Amino acid sequence: MKNVLRFIALLLLYPLSAYSQNNMIFQDLTVIKAHNMMADKQLTSETLVNYYLDRIARIDAKGPQLNSVVQLNKNAIKRAQELDVIYKKSGKVGALHGIPVLLKDNIDTIDGMANTAGSWALKNNYPKDDAFLVQLLKNAGAIILGKTNLSEWANFRSTSSSSGWSGLWGQSKNPYDITTSPCGSSAGSGVAIAADLALLAVGTETDGSVTCPSAINGIVGIKPTLGTISRDGIIPIAHSQDTAGPMARSVTDAVMLLSALTAVDADDNAALAAPADYMSHLKLDGIKGKRIGVARNLMGYHGQLDAVFEQAIVDLQAQGAIIVDSTNFTNSAVWGDAEFEVLLYEFKHGLNAYLAGTDDHTPKSLEALIAFNLAHADKEMPYFKQEIFEMAQAKGPLTDDRYLAALQLAKKSTQAEGIDALLAKHKLDLIIAPTTGPAWKTDWINGDHYLGAASSAAAISGYPHITVPMGYVHGLPVGLSMFSGKLQEGKLIEVAYGYEQSTLHRKSPVL
Image (tube, rainbow, N blue to C red):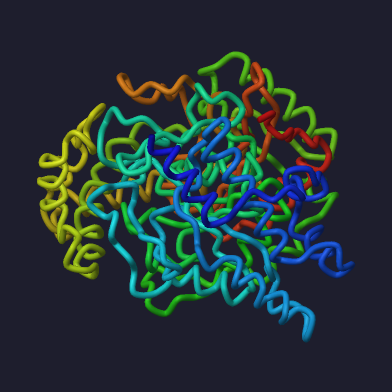
């Protein structure tokens, strides 16, 4: 019933248009191609927005009901019309002129859309201003098309949650097999881009929440160095790991979005100046001469995935990579417990600070959220509970020795004694591993069935991580992860782009 009502609402706002149902020229556009078509007067921003709104109505709210785009900007067409007028008079206002972008539903925007984290408790949380990154997108000429579903509270509420499910918006579905998980927490962003419901999307990651849904939905995801994208206006989990990141169907589009998102926010105490020019690293010969380490202790949990990865190594060597095998982490066993302890402390602290700035109709603390969920258990906890909320609520302040010790251990084991140590020891440019296994069946009773992933070292350290389509296992996409040291996005982009262009693995889902 929820999807039916949403589809009716979409039809009232944006009636189905015959041209976009039948016109194949707009499918799987890139930013550059869209801008070239605008220059040739084959496309306007208004036409492009209508094309995506039509697909959202037919594919996301109806048809296979992917349920990835959960709110729409009612002013998107008006803004597109304004940008079309500007384009005729003076050209592009920025690198993303007229390009529709989706935001994960934990990012503040003033475009008439609530920032909910997928929770009924925040269904009326209408921000007073744009997140810093949203301001940057608008400055670049982007159009905020809508907001995407997520694993509720960015997958940090229950120990047995199901990725892509939220109490407020329901379950998002993998477009390659709607019975399987889209992974999370940026599930809706991954699904929407894979299904061609927008050109670009912004996800957020604490540990794997950009890279996992990107890999499992067959797209490109970039988790940048912590601090290069402002955390202002993003509902937090942990300030020592949280970052937004671009999600797109190509490396070029992901890099263009990354370029638009990175700027120093003076109010973000972790702010770092990003490398000067990401776009200059889009080189066809970017792999040649790169020393690439293979982290074999981040694989071995799925035989068919490993076989696809072995072919990726062959493909990299064919492009001139120097493969250094078995560059394994020796201390990965100590990461998990330390990271989780840090996340519990920082979640309580950060969320309480965010909620304090919301309107009176939202709960004002984690403790109040726990009470809300208990009072609305039929909506919020029909399948799994809030064990993580309760564990976080039991934690003390960020001055606790236990927190400080866990933070030091987590950073040291992934930075100086982790990624940095491997890069130095083997004289590496970057390290690779399979991003995660192919999608598992969605299971609301038992929760997610993760077999393994490569995200934690880069996530905990705050270092950059890119995932690129690597191939398929039984028709389900899998990704190749690449990570390196602090602010080394350039090297990763060079290898990611060279690998993508030499293999061209991505195939659109059949919907």
